[in-house]
Length: 296
Image (cartoon, rainbow, N blue to C red; front, side, top):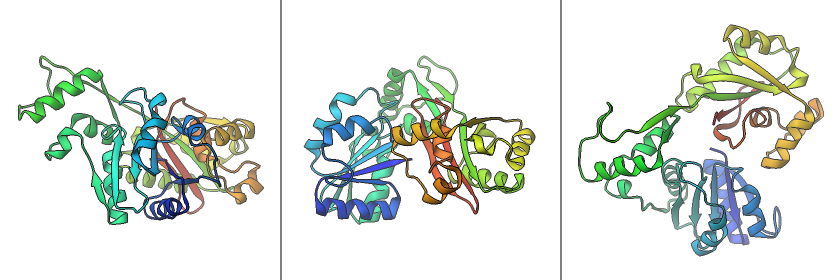
């Protein structure tokens, strides 16, 4: 998940920094990265997989209300109080994985996780949470509720077809890749394999590679695409910069000096699909960077 951690006060910023250090995430402090909270939320709501607010829950409810669309597409939204005592899973607990993230943050802060979804509070699984972990899209939404209600009642739920049928649609992975000049195909393959292992997915789920057009003659990358029978797309610096600005991606000064743009793997992957959800943000593997997106 790619998460934004938003704070409104100096003490909130300290909690945000602590969360970022423990579980990752990009911090946005009022007075530093933004001035108007409503404008920031409007700008980033659909650009991050998770939004973690360090402030009062009421403020968050009012800010996100105009942007909520569906439990199948909305980002995870969490609220942490400014003393770091409670972590509330507020929106998209299952498909967005807010419940899972709340537990991770609570563990990092030694805080109390507040989770209110019906299946979780009685210690039972939900079909949409399982689908999300497996990289599957559950549809239609109405059937998710019917199945979870049956689970709560203690009824048996079968994988085979029945009166109520839920489609679990597998998603492919798009791999954005950045690498140093002359990197071998084996090294890139190993990095890609390790990246997939980090999200518990086989490398066969990767269906597309993406990178900067400065790498269009990179023999290791081209050879890997041929061996794996994958398409590879190349994007200009202008296209990558557009995504960097749109998604507020973190840029590397070294990469900027080398290529002319500060983020390759995340930006290139984002160029391939609209409304993407990160399976793995930018991760470095000794000369190779990989970002994985779920294909919508």
